[in-house]
Image (cartoon, rainbow, N blue to C red; front, side):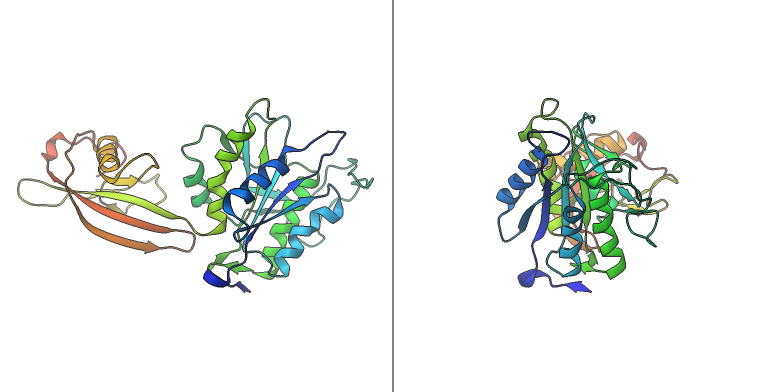
Length: 304
């Protein structure tokens, strides 16, 4: 099943939970509402989930009915110190816990016949790009055994069973656990997760620079990725992603210094290429960075 894209695109579903275990409030709902307000009603539908079995099924039903093009769940974990991106959900309960409806979790499996665990359908590459510059976010593989994990598992299982796609990628579903506000302010939590919400709404466009460097004979420098790299053996221009606070020239100067250990004076943009992948689009800008002495180069991130 393919969810319509572009002008017919469905909004993403962003959820938070009601209070539980005697709490007066649950700021996962505050974060969810803030994201919805920031992105607008056309991009986001926001729902408060009850902490019970019925609440755990609301998102999975929306997925199966084709009502949304992605799902971002928020929950709180009072023992966590940082925002946790949950990379998987497990098909099991913490036996003996009681939800807000009085249901005692005494079953072994959330969904009979389903896998033991399911990994998030949001691309890991996109997740890594979204969080690499954040000190407030970490990856986690422990979503717990309460309603957070149950909700996450049901949502992921619906995508898996129905083979639902949106924007030509598996419909993205992600769960984020939030720490107490006393450890990380509400505004800071909202700011930290907003980019992830945007990546779920649409495959991100990543602006990347590449340095065109030549030696005195006019030969163009190309560098090879090392064996431990995901793209091991590939040849490329030195360069990388442009951060939000940089322009193209600042970014290419920084990347060349970080990768080759030299300082350059970048010139003009000489080429542009768009590479469209399933989970993202790379907007590559090639910058003429002049002539360098090959003997001055120290390979830091490449092996040749």
